[in-house]
Length: 229
Ligand SMILES: C[S@@+](CC[C@H](N)C(=O)[O-])C[C@H]1O[C@@H](n2cnc3c(N)ncnc32)[C@H](O)[C@@H]1O
Image: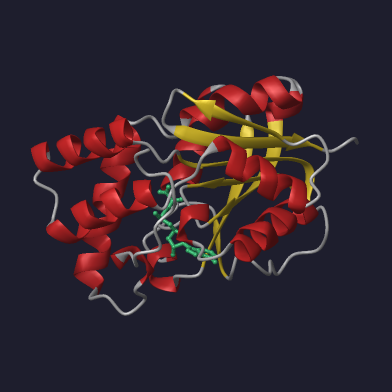
């Protein structure tokens, strides 16, 4: 079967020493792809469902592997348009990526060992981050840490590993004339992506009680879990 196993080929996104202009270009291209693929939608749709609209009026969120803070920016703007106050903290390994962010607070750090106390944020989110991790142990540590610092809920999502998504990303990036490094990262990302049963097993190993993992529109794997407050 196609893409049965994850590959672990390196991505340009993980090279911390890239020239600044190339890095800024890559994050700008990622923002374009995120917008076209409506990657803020899972949080916009699922958080009010999980927590209730009333609870969503004021929230603190931590975005793990936030890059240039695109997601937090979108969420804060979207929430503000509803009269809600969402305050997003961006965390990433890459200080130079965070310096491209225009909004929220930025913290340089690893999603595997978060520099925050237990329950420090109402909600912990992450988008397209877990596939950057090399081993199941690392993904497990990431899930555990996200759960630890969340007061109420975690909502994590990443790419589903499938051939249709691979072809769609290839086509989109060719039409957009993306730089070859970005095209390579886009395709490698899908092949480093996940299947639902893999995330279910990892969520179980991370001891996240009641974690729900499912396939979202054939393209993303979502993990959602709620704490009993
Ligand atoms: C593909 S980018 C996604 C950025 C952003 N979430 C988005 O969807 O636009 C993956 C990000 O994860 C970050 N990253 C990789 N490993 C990490 C780790 N262990 N802790 C924190 N960030 C990490 C990378 O530096 C990069 O900015």
